[in-house]
Image (cartoon, rainbow, N blue to C red; front, side, top):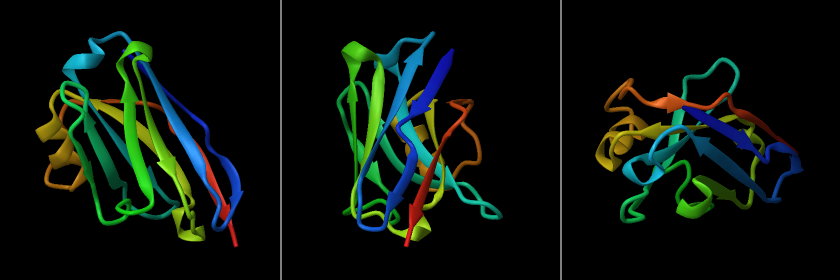
Length: 129
């Protein structure tokens, strides 16, 4: 199983970035993909989930209104479009493959600390003021 995030970088406040999560080694359609981030000295923060069976989505308050999640089953990839970025969005962004949308929801909202998910290594996003 492999998840590889890409698309991070340095952007000015107010700008946009589109993150990608390329996956392999599992049946993409049977999993949900979640996006998370972790800033230095802070706990991991859940952002969004997408269920690859029916494209159900969920956003936490941190992501709602500025971030959009979507996936492409043919490419076995998920994406996080981030708009109107703020300096406080600076973090390493991770994607995770979770066995169900409901488990992804529990993971993203912090109800669960782990759900036997698979993680990528992350991509750095830095937003300058």
